[in-house]
Image (cartoon, rainbow, N blue to C red; front, side):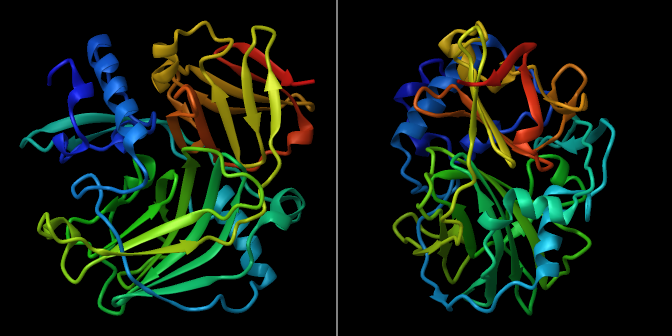
Length: 376
């Protein structure tokens, strides 16, 4: 790979997307020269990116038949959303472990998966924290022989969690996944997929509930980080792309069709700003934490762009308990999804939290051992 990557176009990397570097979930080690070149290439890619994607790294556009929202969620389903999206229902805590994976070159590569801990959710407490902002009207969209149903969604200005299902009587072909996908980079777009789902202005991690899913129905949770903040009153969007044949096999001059669907999460959770004596800044809500690595942590702008320079994040509560969100040294990752390189200066890293946080009970937060308290 040439060092001057900024002169390359998106099409120069047909099998490489920025999402390959979104999450700190595997122990990879890159040279400083490679990191620098990679950062420049991704910055250039994101500046040009308007959520249109060329095939291999993405595809273009989709036409669908969209039905009106139906019914009102039963309260028990609301509780299920809280327990499954932010609790330990349908998922198990795991210790750090190493597995062998295909490296795509006929060999095997060792991948170390982090320790993840899930905790129970009190539905009443969850309702008091995020209930008013959680959507309760399912939205159903028919795409070819598949049906997409958005069941619930909740967001703040930086991140969103959405529950949805995909159904097809002959078998769902949208995603590829295995027993370790939920511990790695989530479900992947299938090579033979005729449908592609992309969140507008966002990058996502797709968690598949294996217990609820079958060959003809996938029960999914999307953990999204917005590239640019989505303020209260705005509707997040989902772009749906489809064709009669697999998207990856479409000729270069043939574009799929597109339909953009509004996600019923107009109302945003409030975020609380925190600062450090060193000039640091972060934002915390009940579902996410966004940290500007370029402020108060002693990192250069180039270092701040690299999520690998985030070492540890801990949320300390007033009762003395601690939520260890992330610790690179001990390989703990209690996020649902982590995306770096967002924000105006590409120095913000945002984490979807894997449990709900009562911000009113937070005493302080530490990032790389720097203490943050509520900004005044």
